[in-house]
Length: 305
Image: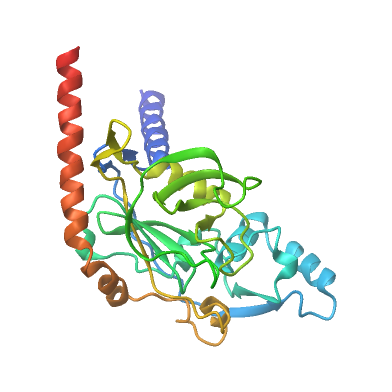
């Protein structure tokens, strides 16, 4: 009897863990059937500088970096510096937390919660000055990561957009030699979207929103596409995306000031609310419109059967 009870408990634990690992289930209407997300507890420690290209011996500095930190810790540090592993040698220095957790979420520049978003099922923010994105489900931040947005010459458009079409692989309209993986378009006429591409630690794209591979793949699966009638008529918009702010190209990225200012990488709740305010009504209207469209398609599908 005792063994039987233990087996039941073990199965329940395994089922719960599996469900947690799956996370939110996507619905076509933009909502999610998610287990309660745990609110992020922001990191409250300090930061140090690790010289790389600026070190007396850059190769030794890199070797020490790889020796001191695990693979998971290095991934977090690189993400915090908005850089990928292929560009680390180009960095003058890296910002390193004095306690390196393997959970990137604790270092998020975005607020953990925004009550004004409680009724919004899904939304993505891209911050130009902080070169970072954040994903919210019903007001709770569920993911963030680094991005590399448009250069000063080829800036990324700002404002409210909606995810439209996507492709696992897409040839760039700027250069046919550029293969864009996990591409999700948000501005159809200009061909602007997010996708996997090089992350050098500063805005380097031709107006798109570059991402690390794990983020590009995650967002590719998580976000909703538009719903079309025929080839051109939009019946319902996809996931809302707000791109905001401007980057000071005369200065280094604000996150690089963390060793001197622990708040240098922080977007306040008031700041994010201000970016949201002028777009909230439109977002709510499009969310309701999508719900009606999806429900109608489900009814039509049921009748057809």
